[in-house]
Image (cartoon, rainbow, N blue to C red; front, side):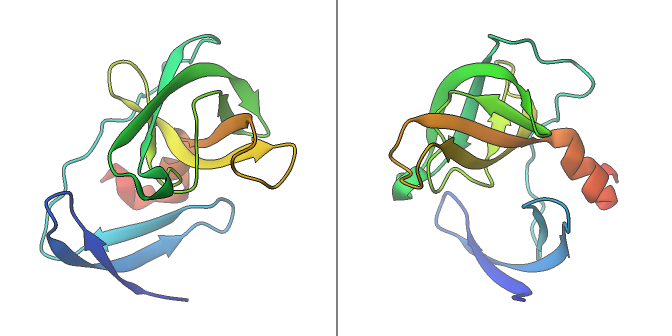
Length: 140
């Protein structure tokens, strides 16, 4: 299991990061950057999402940096947030946010009928509360 990583910031700066923890229950890992205090997105808190609410998936799908796709929150399935916002390879690990920019979840995958990521499907995100439950150190 790899424990050291190189992270590239938006401005091209390269930083070292260490693996802090890996979730045994979800597709999540917690990294810590060395010598750098990162900005962060506030979590949504206890507010309940409403079906038809607009959500946004942020990431770098297919190597295209800084993309945001909008979609509709359609509900929970199997403990995951479900949306029709496009989540492609490269979005996973990025945040799913609400209209106020608060983190709702961590984009994880696209559910399709077939294995082809270009097929139509639904985006799935791990609820942000799960990340705080899995990694208690996030609350500090």
